Image (cartoon, rainbow, N blue to C red; front, side, top):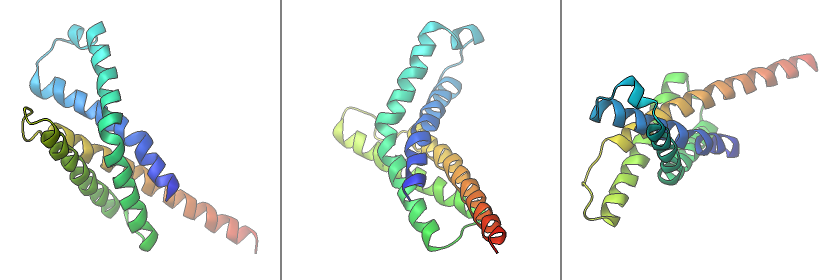
Length: 148
């Protein structure tokens, strides 16, 4: 459980921050390629990654814990793993948006950027954790067959 949660805490906010930046650039603004790689945009990427950790660490930890709990109870296939993590990423990120809106009454009441970033981060982390779990089970099976 610790390893899976740490994977979500480590990768989830980075993936979410990059996803938020990509959504911001592609959906809200049409920028030239030279503007996209300008010095100011590099600072924007750094800001979004740091913001992803600040805003995304708690939802990533909650998603990782939920995924670890479910996987420890029953085996999931890749699709179930991805859907579970995408749903958990959406719900935890959506709760973060609601909390931010309640803390800052002047902010817009709903924003799809953070929940969609949570879906992407949950999907990628869930797939990675599923692959690592399969490799661990295969390695355990091979070492068990060698000892016989």
